[in-house]
Image (cartoon, rainbow, N blue to C red; front, side, top):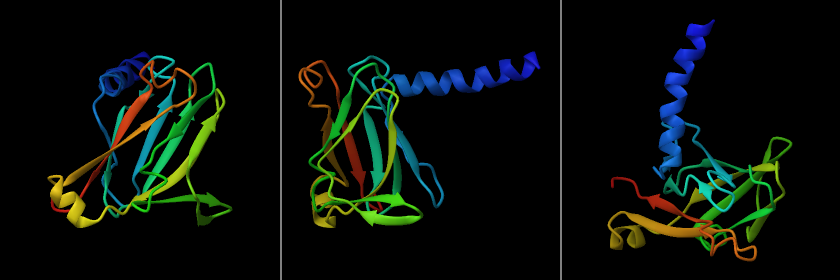
Length: 157
């Protein structure tokens, strides 16, 4: 039994270390992509990861959770623009939502489905990738470093 725990630790510790170093999170290969965005980690006023890679036109399940001790929010011009379709699943039915901001109390989490729809000419002009900032704009949280970047990558780049 002890050998299993040691083997598990040898796998998890490097993965956890990479996520805390600011390595961009990418959606997994395959049909279903999933990324977890954690508020309040590795410090109270941070997002982990601070960069999230998204494929243009592909669905990504974005799990957002507040692991901090205070209320946090997620705001992004990208998610509220025509360049992103945001869906929420209720009782097995996906419904498009108008996204402005998402506030979560400590311990809360939610899931969104994000489908980037950045025009090809915009991606081409930006070398195949477009960056969109996100942050927590509760008083002083952003100033303390609570911000990150959605990076949308086009096909073939």
